[in-house]
Structure formats: structure tokens, C-alpha cells
Image (cartoon, rainbow, N blue to C red; front, side):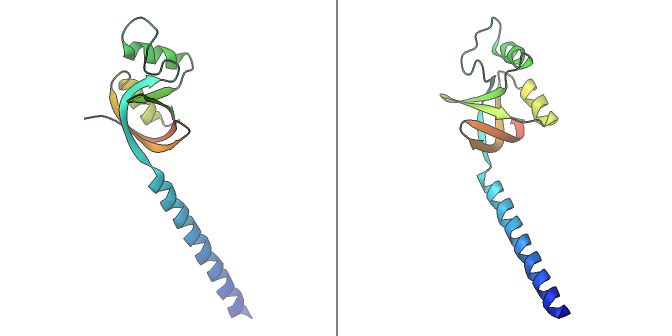
Length: 117
């Protein structure tokens, strides 16, 4: 009787582990890198404030706009609460950066940001 319970518990644990690993691998597979210019979601590719693009981006973000990445004619809104990623986005405002994350409906959930080469 005890062997049956242990066997069932082991089988259940093995299934949970397999499902967890599968889910994690699918999440990693969906992660992709995008290289473009760091902007903000309000201005996108065309900045409206006087001054350079970096100053406009920082001013708009300070007023509540989200960072964005302009890749060709496409503008992706960037979602992150990671302080290191936000610091890099601030530093790269108006400049090229490579953002890694998962994209859905023109929003990238950011896992990392680095200056583009």
C-alpha cells in the first residue's frame, strides 16, 4: 500500500517537473533580440519637443510615457521594471540599443538591454 502511494507521488512529481521544464523552454524560445533607436511611446519615431531626441525621450518618460524602440518603421513599447534595464534605456535614449525580450501586440517585455554595436 505504501509503495503504491510513493510510486504515485513520484509519478506526479515527475509530471510536474516535465511540465515546468517544457513551459520554461517555450518561454525562452519566444525571447528575441531587437535592435533599433530608443525613444518613447508618445513620440515614437518623430519627436515633438525642441532639442535633441535624447532630451525629448527623457522628458516624455519623466512625464509618464514608456520607453519605446523604433525598428525601421515599427515602434515597440517597452515594458520593464528592471532598474538596470531602465538605466541602460535612459543612457541610450536617442541612440541605438539591442533589446531582448518577448513581443506581443507591439509591446516587448524586456529581459535585457545593451548598447548596439
